[in-house]
Length: 85
Image 1 (cartoon, rainbow, N blue to C red):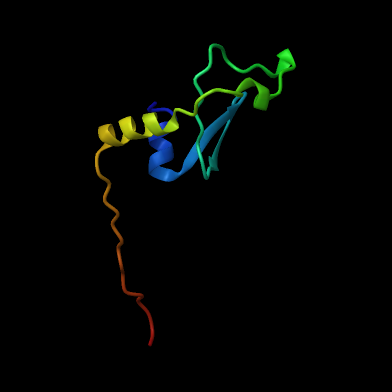
Image 2 (image 1 turned 60 degrees about the vertical axis):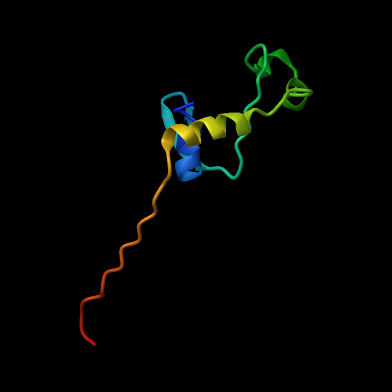
């Protein structure tokens, strides 16, 4: 949960790894499905069929993560621009 849910709640981004390369990507929505086994593209099953009739448990994990993280405070710093008028 700390690897995906909490960073997504804080920054609305996810971190993807492909080999040794790590990239941070913006995500609008996060879906988490509870399945019996991990998805493997090599098995020839399309992802839509793999998650068919599976429940998206993100809302449950989101509530649990928010209770662990606590409230967030946004701070904006306003600094005057220095220079000639």
